[in-house]
Length: 261
Image 1: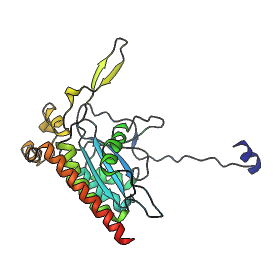
Image 2: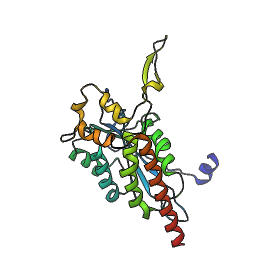
Image 3: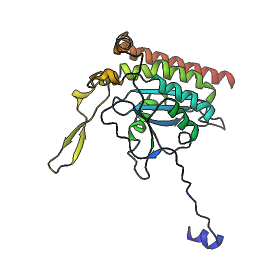
């Protein structure tokens, strides 16, 4: 405030630090899968006890999504989980886009992406809130919906991570339909997006619907293998298994916390 500046006499303004890691632009996948958006979701702190973090990765074109959980987002915890999530995608990962958080914009993450032959490392632009909108919307519609807003202590990260990777992620990719946009040009020449119900499909069905979809798969991965996963259980049974596993997970967490108290 002006009063503070007058009394203080001298104000040292914040000096932004330029970090030359990642290209500051929006990705351009051009209808190719493999351009991922990433974000972190914190499960809150309570009475000085740190909550765990979720790492949320979403492909822009197919909406394939993998979620993992970690007790902290320091490099020693984050990097192994991030590598496992990147390896879980059935298609080649071509791009990695994050906001400007230091957990992703650092040399060790850049080295990991180079090791995995990820061609593009991009980060959100200033005052462009839509640059990472897809994964941020999934934070609410998926992560918060299934794992809630309540505090989960970091000591339960292993249990929650097992649920997220082994139960939740397969359900999202093979059994949960998503809206996909259709671009329409209006009378004024502006391109608008519409989300018709008849274009709803699972991320896996979207992947298979792409022209020459086999070309995008990783070496050693085939649609026959993925079909076996997708059709091993019905959508309704998969949803029921998800709800049962989630209920068991939170019963375990609640029971453990009551015992500790």
